[in-house]
Image 1 (spheres, rainbow, N blue to C red):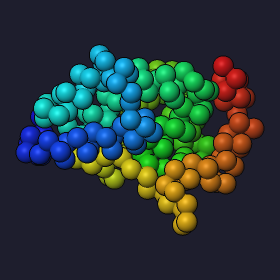
Image 2 (image 1 turned 90 degrees about the vertical axis):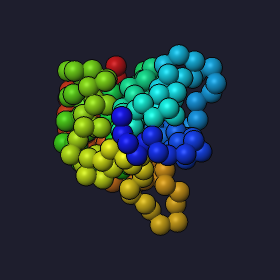
Image 3 (image 1 turned 120 degrees about the horizontal axis):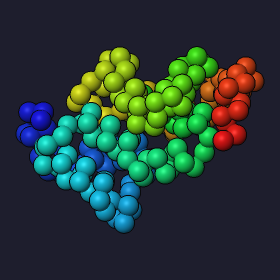
Image 4 (image 1 turned 135 degrees about the vertical axis):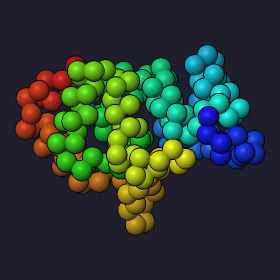
Amino acid sequence: MESRQRNRDPQALQNLLRAAYQQILERQPYQHEKVGELEKIEQDFLRGRVGIKRLVRQVGGSHLYQQLFFNAGCNTRCVEQGFKHFLGRAPADKAEVATYHDILVRQGFQAMVNAFVDSEEYHHHFGNERLPHPRQRLMGYPPVAYLLTDRMNRSHQLAMQGSPLLQSLAVM
């Protein structure tokens, strides 16, 4: 248990929880979605039993996250969303996408989430005490616009064109 977590006031913890949901799920969960898994995660966080990094890992590994971002699309899109949610940026190139795609395919969804959260980049930018947040900003656009940049679209197209494995898995 993180000592800083125990010393935060309840309103600050509620604000952190809402920010975590917004960054990871891109919305606040509906009350019926909180029953069970998210409810326990939320209670543990608000009581100071788990810290921010563990909250990120648990919300990211939740059934709701899987339903919203893994089951609803192709594996490549799930990896791209992982970059956005856990590292706060779009993938830099097709090699990055391929690395996390390989983890997803070979080791499973939770292993991919763990790889993002345990990465050196995550540790460097967020550590144990900070929520992931958008790190790429486009002037004059909302923070979510970074996933719509030409660079990401080009990377996605190149990845799809250059890799028969990615092409075959994208249609799954």
